[in-house]
Length: 236
Image (cartoon, rainbow, N blue to C red; front, side, top):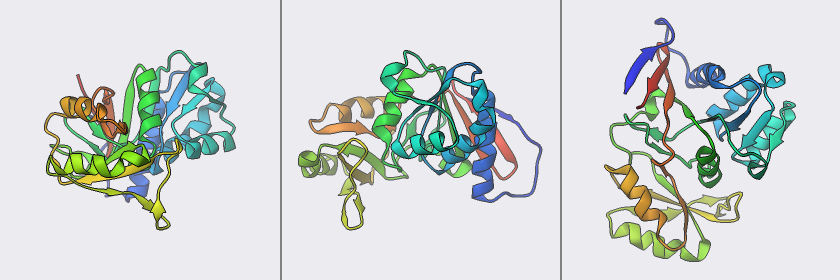
């Protein structure tokens, strides 16, 4: 991992200001004349707002969620279905956690399956996050797993056998339903020391739609909002 600062020291910024800063910094990775992959979440919303300033320079976007699609379209940015697009030059998205190799935990916004699909279509993944998301070992943030509802309790038991505690994510007192019509199980108590092997194993469990470890589709670049500004992390 190499590190390079992109701004001089400055007074501490609020988390919202950091999100705005990294959202704007991500514009430098958008390829003019092409389609950009766009993720989901509060940090990505800042990127979408910034992207509006160059909407006439791109063909449009492929979005990872209905919420991001609505925001993009409201700003006059064309949104393509992923099946209409062969390749995407860059995917810009946030992370709940990212380690020193670019592996991530994602899915706090319940869009992990579509995020992983768009990431897989993209030549480059640029993660935008604040410095609290950088960890030595994945597992501090609850691990989201999108599951077929009928398999939820059995999958929770499988994680329990590995030392994890799982709960079905709720919204308004009922299981949250994803854009794909599935449920999210959040797992705590795990340290994911081998993200690639972990992702491969859990992805094979019957009923798992997507596990929120992004190791096969890890980030190549992370724009990290820090007290001193934006720091660029690059991963070989």
